[in-house]
Length: 205
Image 1 (tube, one colour):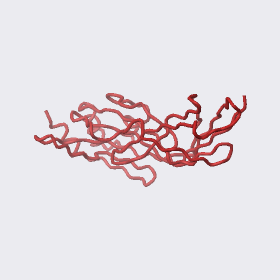
Image 2 (cartoon, one colour; image 1 turned 180 degrees about the horizontal axis):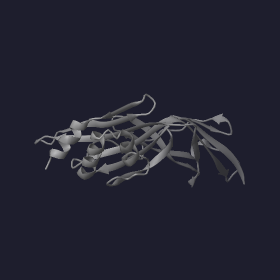
Image 3 (tube, one colour; image 1 turned 45 degrees about the vertical axis):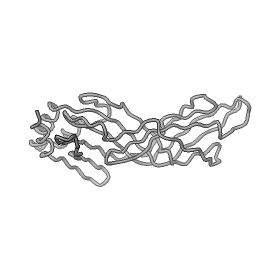
Image 4 (cartoon, rainbow, N blue to C red; image 1 turned 120 degrees about the vertical axis):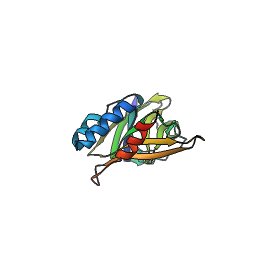
C-alpha cells in the first residue's frame, strides 16, 4: 500500500482547564502574601496539575488556520465548526477556573496510507477545538483520511506560557462579572496576581 506524508505547520497552543476551590485559593493567597511567587507557580500552575477538578485534560497542536501540505503540496480544507468550544459561560462561582495555556510555532507530521494509491483531499477530515477565555485560539485535535485516524507527531522549538486564573462575581439577578485574577505571560515577563479578587471570592458564603 502506498502512502503520502502530511505536514502541518503554524501557530498553535496547549490548553488545559481545571477547577479551583476556596481552600486552594486560600493557600494561594497565603503563599502570595509571603512573597513566594516561584513557589506559587511551581505548586499550582504547572501542566498536568488538575488542582481541584479536571474539566479538560488538555490538547496540544497547531491551530486550524495552519499550513497543511501533503508530500510538499499545499492543500486547502473545508473549515468546519469546532467540536468543542471552551469559554466563560459556565463559571465556577464557588471558586475559580484555571486555564493552562501555551502558545508558539508548532509543526506536526504524519503518514497517510492510500487504499487506492491516489490522495484525494476530499477524504481528509480535520477536527479542532476552540477556546475563548480572555485569550482565544484553536487546536487541531483529530486528523482522519478515508475514515482512518492519522497519528500526527507534534514538536516545537519552545512555547510561551500564558496561564490565567478567572474568578467571578454574580449579582442577585444572575449577571456574572469575570475577572482575570492571575495572568502569567512568560514572553513579556508579566506576572499579575490580584489578591483583592481572591479575597472577594473567599468572602462569599
